[in-house]
Length: 76
Image (cartoon, rainbow, N blue to C red; front, top):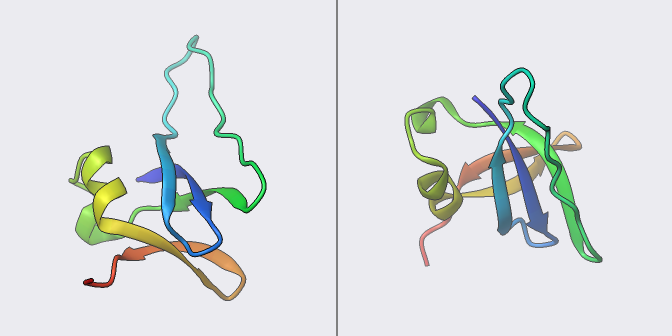
């Protein structure tokens, strides 16, 4: 499952959107402001059955080999 993420410089998710668009439906795009980036990324296999709110609350972005990747949040 791929999702579109809006994240800050520390990898915290600001917004999350499913990328599947039904035919005939308008596509949408998250827009970044200063200090934010937007990327389309693959959800890790362990989270593919999770809801978007669960993915938002449990994952963050890290950059691996120059590519944004979703990873589990580190415990506080």
